[in-house]
Length: 152
Image (cartoon, rainbow, N blue to C red; front, side, top):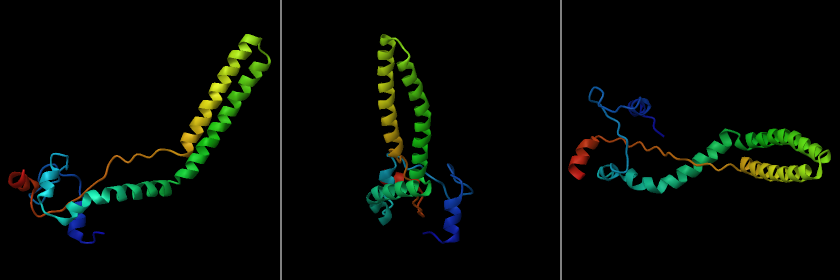
């Protein structure tokens, strides 16, 4: 955890594409720039790739816990079931009062609707969480442009 006020000020500042008054510049560390970052010879950079899976797992746990995701999912399934029950009841009533051909077609429709609903409920109950972004902040006294020229 960072407690140094000067470092916190830099970390909390808006993204700076160009140097602001010469004090610092932010860089998007894309795949082409990783060799330059590795050239900074910072131990934390070497360990970074090992931390990514752990950070992803912790982020998912926080997301599930902090957003009450399980409760939200249960409520969404319940609302969907209530809506579906009305539609299924309408289809059943239509089947009971229809001619044989229409009843057969409507029965097939009801079966498809029930299968789809069951699949949707399962997907809502167990959402797939994909975390696409991991943020890395490396603070160095050496500008990345110097490192690129020296190591890139």
